[in-house]
Image 1 (cartoon, helix red, strand yellow):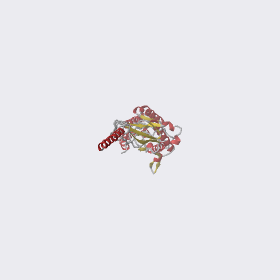
Image 2 (cartoon, rainbow, N blue to C red; image 1 turned 180 degrees about the horizontal axis):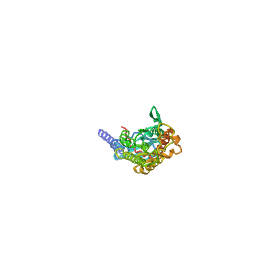
Image 3 (cartoon, rainbow, N blue to C red; image 1 turned 135 degrees about the vertical axis):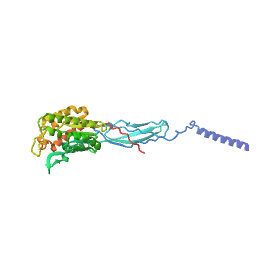
Length: 346
């Protein structure tokens, strides 16, 4: 009897053992889970840039690299780096997918706002017309009206068109300067100011010395000096070590009627016109942009020019500033394709 119970008990144990084994193996062999940790990625910091005029522009960023996961672990971002992003805020979603189909995601924003111009540092270089002298005398001294000078007015125009861009227009005009002295002064000023664009309006004093009457041989020599020295100044600015991409050269303004004052400073109009013709003929080949101011004054000489017949009054400085402003807008890109590599979050 005891033997039968023992055999029955052993059979029962064997039955339960087989049942357990069958239950455990009903789905086939046990599959191991994916080895290692799932993938991880870290997105760039949010990108915020002042965009150019227009509905969109390309923006580039560094695509994240995945850590961990079963290799290979490719990462894709939507929109992708180099895509055209619209003005406003666009979310970018980056996804890492490993060989075991495990995913990790991160997001960052690209925000394009406002207006941007490619150049923000301008150097206005010249003589008393740039400095801001208005042809009037007080206590025996020439009056320098800096708030009415054309560089000040140009600063106002640029600030209005491109707010929050940190635009700077430096006024480095020197009253009474011979243009050859200006050429000698220019390299040091360029080194000090580090401009991205140079605005030249120079040569009045050389013509004033010998060109108050119709053109003579001495006046012709001065005209040649002005034009050749302007060409040298353009070359200085355009070549190393300064290598400016943008040099603007203004034509000289016509004489106005002499209406009183300590001195008649009218330069003969034919000398002005001959100088301007030479400027327009010779300087574009050096990479200069010509700003043709002369015709803007015609018919407005009494309004635009001070009583001494030479220096501009405030409306004349408005015209000069406006001419340079229009030339800057036409020549300097306002929709650069910004390529920006973002730093990664830690």
